[in-house]
Image: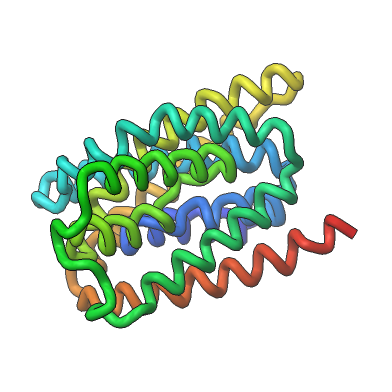
Length: 253
């Protein structure tokens, strides 16, 4: 592995700790383009890496009282079965299709975060059914594109559940752990059926550096205005969406 890949591992953790998202957005391209892993292997490995980093960050936010457990229940539990179903569906398409779908959804989430706050829903305005359905939808996408789902969870928690940005970040990390564990279990099963193995040395290395970055990101997040976090988060998603489309679309031709 190159030194640039290790720097990327730190960036993955920093992104998760600071924004509660973006870990898989960085992990999949790093594993694919810098480490040289096939897309399917990178997607499965990403779930293990991001889930492990999110666990550390989520515990840290929970100790600070920045996790909304009702939202974890409503978003996370329905997402488990949906994540498993999404991972199963991903076995019928190639990695390029998954990345393109991932980039498109990421762009939509970015625009929702960049909307003026007055256009957002007020806290508690959405019914329990809407929250449960949204959690299942996020889980389905998480399993299909092989990411933790934070780039969908944070906007959903802000817009639908009415959580403040910092609390949405902490809650997102806990849900990511649940979804990533479910998705990784199924992705690993699919790889084994194809006689393909993941590299645990890479996963462990990324986990260690990513956890260090996550703890740093959490400390920074507590000192940055939440409105600025929303702005940075939205434009970060747009930039990564364009990059992934630029790298993935040519594979169709």
